Amino acid sequence: MRYEEFTIEGRNAVIEAFRSGKTIDKIFILDGCQDGPVRTIAREAKKAGTIINYVAKERLDNMSETGKHQGVIAFAAAYEYAEVSDILKAARDKKEDPFIFILDEIEDPHNLGAIIRTANLCGAHGVIIPKRRAAGLTATVLKTSAGALNYTPVAKVTNISATIDELKKEGLWFVCGDMGGEIMYNLNLKGPIGLVIGNEGNGVSRLVREKCDMIASIPMKGDIDSLNASVAAGVLAYEIVRQRLN
Image 1 (spheres, rainbow, N blue to C red):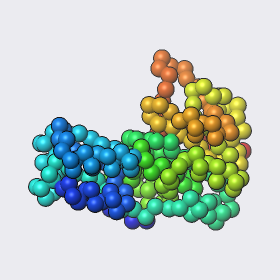
Image 2 (cartoon, one colour):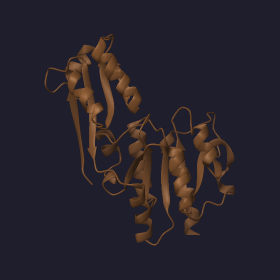
Image 3 (tube, rainbow, N blue to C red):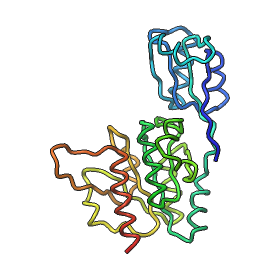
Image 4 (cartoon, rainbow, N blue to C red):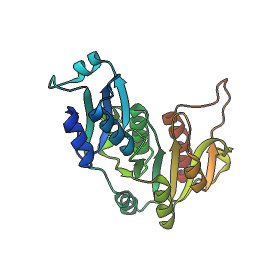
């Protein structure tokens, strides 16, 4: 796998990057700037599901490599993404039941990197992320994954719900993490499985939750009622590992 993150600076360059279909993970726009080209960039970013950050000029000046950012800097990732079929092939090659992480709009790159690291260590065959409204494979993700990104295939898909439907045809069934579900220790988590982890604030979206065959909750004994998304992913993943070992 190959990873390289690079910046695109200037209004026309960023507009053309979007229109050419380049994957833009996040974009920084001068706060308060609302002229025509900037409105066009914001519109294209929203269409692509790119994270938009409005920041002060000093922030842009510090980020700029050219000194000619024109109030706009985009971060793009050039990465050899896997296909979903590559993930299934990895399971077949190992003669194992597929074990796949499906991430429903994880926005924090630290969480994404930590989840990829966990996926690698627990023997998952790959990770699937959405193209829109989610963190992409940035340098922060690479660093947080502690190198796991080089070994664990990551596929980016247009529609998580449709992907789940396709994977069900391949024999997988799906469990998502949600506080309103059955205690995970009471569920049968063996066999070909997809583990669905939801957004840090809103959890698994309704449409994706409805596609899942089971909803698993993690026992909570403290004074707060939720875990960090990457921690929850680890707890649920290792219950799957435990059951697969037995």
